Amino acid sequence: MDVLKLIYDSIDEINEDLEEGEKVEKGEDTVIYADGSSLDSLGLVNLITIIEQKLEEETGEYITIADERALSMESSPFQTVKTLKDYIEILINE
Amino acid sequence: MSKSLDHSKVFLITGTSRGVGKYLAEYYTGLGHHVIGCSRGESDIEAGNYKHYKVDISDEKNIRLIFSHIRKEHKTVDVVINNAVRNPANISSALLNYKSIEETFRVNLFSTMIICREAVKLMVRAKSGRIINIGSMVTKSNHEEFGGSLYTPSKAALNSYSRVLAKEVYRSGITVNVVAPSALETDLAEKSDQNELMKALSRNAIKEFGKMEDVSNMIDFLIKEDSSALTGQIYYLGGV
Image (tube, rainbow over all chains, first blue to last red; front, side):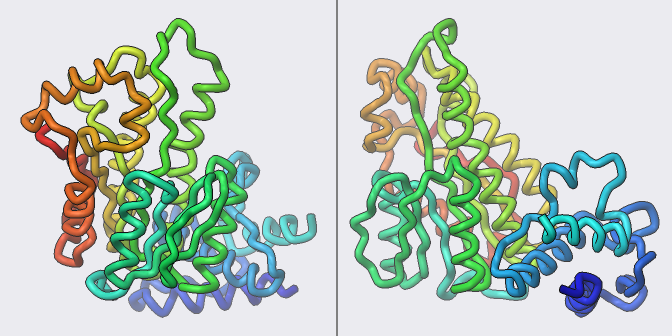
């Protein structure tokens, strides 16, 4: 599965609702949820929800991305597109 | 709000095999809404627009199952009514055991938090939604009952949680409120210490048992599109 494409498709969806200047750039270094990010907490919820639903469509299984491990990690997997991609790949390969 | 809440809606109501939950499920299916209900027991609601899950919602896996159905069949959920409750027999705080504390909070609080988490994910995308958590008059000052050291704090925590959630999600068109009836003639009330219950009712402006219709009237008001600015409140019924 191409997780990066799945994340980019999800970003496209949330960008439909964002104004110019607020849109999330598609790039592995894009900051998703940290200082300097364009998403607030509800924006992050929205993005995660879309990704979880796309994962469910592809795998047939519902995977909770914001699980206990994600919330307890010293370095949040929600910081950038790359950290999120890496974390999702861990989840789907388990 | 991007979507009207005044037409046919998708409801999720927990604890629908009896009492208030059953009444609300029948009431809203009767109005033509799609209602997804759940309880540990069977349901005898036969409406075609009602779907029942016989599950224990204190298990997170079962909540995920219900939301998987909602995502596939309805895409979103418009109204969530967290009504399922565990009301253990009144017992002195000095005799509480850990398992009873844990089970009470799993049903009365933890499951509600997980259901709200999943509902909010869908409602944020829809930019609209109504969450109603069913509270209790026992959380009002001076309505604490002797021996209510499990049920009362679980409902008080539900109030606090609802107010926090309301602040977090308001910008997405979602409101969160607690509807707290006084006492209704349900199995739950029958199980309560009758002396303590009558003492609590005697402190209210209305000293008789409340009606199921009082609850649905309040919920009808809160889920209207025009009620979009009413959030983070605890609505006590029965003159509490």
